[in-house]
Length: 218
Image (cartoon, rainbow, N blue to C red):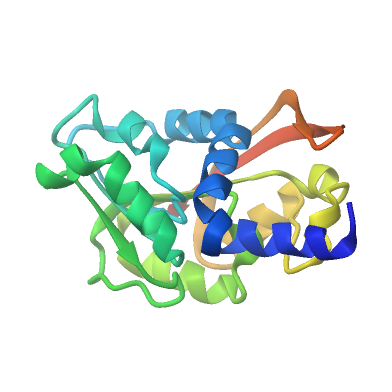
């Protein structure tokens, strides 16, 4: 695979756009199926929970959060207009009932009042946060007292072998992620590490692991 194609893949993973955006969203669903379901399990959903997701892609997994309890509300943010449009299509019934909504915005400035959400989570997006401390300060602001933040990633030990990560990705070890949260006024509660089946990428098989850190607002 030539460097220009690798660079294009990196840009599309960061912010799907243009002719390939819809297909990129579908590919991300395939590659992120297990990590999304693991994350939803860690959310430990309760009746009445108000959930915020940062970077939900095309919103395929939103149904797994809200369909079991009509009192759970969900807001998804993304800075790809195409992903917002696709998420609206996948979840039109939940949107019409008022249970789900999607907003086009950058996570560095969250368009919400203080102490609104019970849980905030993000799957495979922290690599692209240009100013993670700023994003985390915004998450802290919109979380209710004792609210939870759940960050799910592929750890550095796995990601460093992917050719596209040299273009705009920040990589994290377990310690990196835990320390980042601790330094931004969160208390790490649980950390989950899981191996997944290998993923075929072109003609290669790539090792896949899930790392999920759940922390509480101090």
